[in-house]
Image 1 (cartoon, one colour):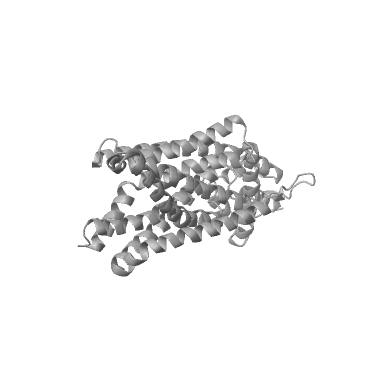
Image 2 (image 1 turned 120 degrees about the vertical axis):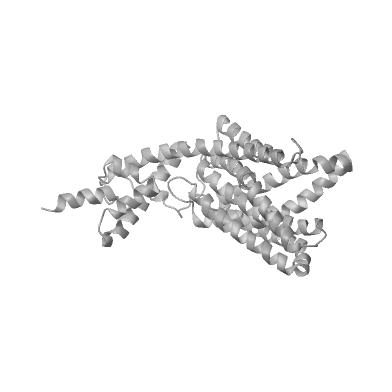
Length: 375
């Protein structure tokens, strides 16, 4: 006699009925399942990733170890700022992914690439290209425009390579533009954190090492508090969106998608160029204008991919929910963290683990369906 209300609560919470016999389960949709033929590329990609990270780390150690020994307290302060920035950025950038946060392993892999491989190899690449500009343009012109002609090309392509490697190593984690945006932002975050440490040591030298700790603190506050919104995370998020456009098409995009991806990569390079170019002068207002333009472009890209992704996921959730007897409104509510929390709280405490598990399964199926429809 009491079964009907219980069914109603379970359906609202995401338990629902068992799937009909003819309904396919899409088991390949769950995280951790590699698409057919992806194992060998993933192994090769993992090897390239490991070697590049080790090489980048070696370059960084060679660049910084003497300064660490000479300025131990300033080094400890720089490390503290780096850890705090990385932890906060990692948390907030994963939170901006709609529906659910990205895969934890993929997030860590993306961040590690930015922390080590991209920054370390970027130091070498920037030094080589700067030498070329010195010979071609002369020392005076290179001193003014060298950063704008060097870093946007080298650093954005190196960060982009890391995003592609994440997509190859963990294909289930980067299946569309929204995944590319978030994982690209995490690559940029890692790059920014390490670069902040490098610039902190450079600030010590530029001030004559009269107050090493103050130099490090000032550099960190300026680079995080003043230019942080328009820094590497924003540029790499745009480039990562391009990778997502290609990944969702199985790396065989049509002309429209390929052109869109190319334009996004060029936009990321242009954003970096704008930050480094000596335009509008070097005053506070000029810096704020450049940061605002970069942040605005990135947020425009995010708004488009977020809206598109949420629309497809809600549609897929309605279909998946109908297959297990959920009301459309209850199924669509699973697209938000608040909706899932309310649904879980609507049942008795002992039943909540089962509710959460079913919610995760339905979400995995819905996100996989949304990714297939996007492709």
